[in-house]
Amino acid sequence: MRHSWVLLIATLCAVLSGCATRPRYDSVFDGDRFGWHTLPGGSWKFYRDVIRGTSPATEKRHGLLVTNDQYEDFVAKLDFKVTEGDSGFYFRVEETGSSVGVAGIQVEVDNIEPGGLYETGGRGWIIKKKPAEVAEYYRPREWNSMVVIAQGADVTVFINGQQTSALHNDTGRRSGHLALQLHGGQAMHVEYRNIRLRKLGPKDNPWSDKSLPRRQQ
Image (cartoon, rainbow, N blue to C red; front, side):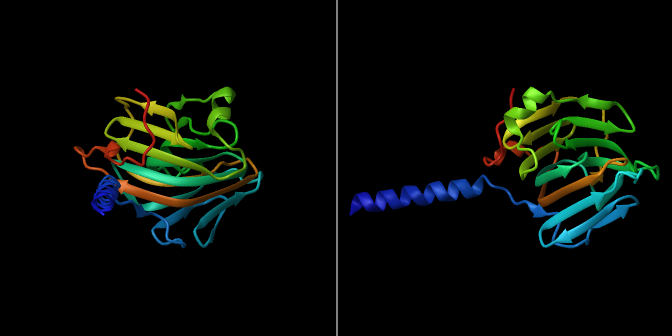
């Protein structure tokens, strides 16, 4: 009997310890357009927990779905699936009123170079992925998971648990909107779901969340 109690106590301690290392993530999308606005180009539809973006190749503008709020340091988690076209998960961007809509960094979301980093209205490609690298972590035309950690001048990106991009002492913007992209001039069909965010303070340790993938040093 004593052995059973010891085992039970050890199990409870493990459970409580695991809960303590899993901070809260707030949903950024609750099944409708609340908290977001669109910039002209393409079309965004909402199906329960899924955001679906489509656009014809004749549309020259970059259609965007943009958060009303702006964010500084955060951990973002989301799932995406690309049927066709070139999309992106933007963060810390500013609206420009141009045909591309915003300026800032995006995580590339497509079936060719997903997980790379591109700065619209700035440096262009910052980190461009090679086909052999992409084949190790990406599932074309299926649901894939993404984690983006942005704190100060450091940015780390994971696709399906594998680190794909990392910036240190980056010179880019430190705050701005989140946005989902429909690239102009392409037939587009992309879906997003489970967009969750944990805001970080300057002294918070994002890696205290043991559910996050492990970063490469």
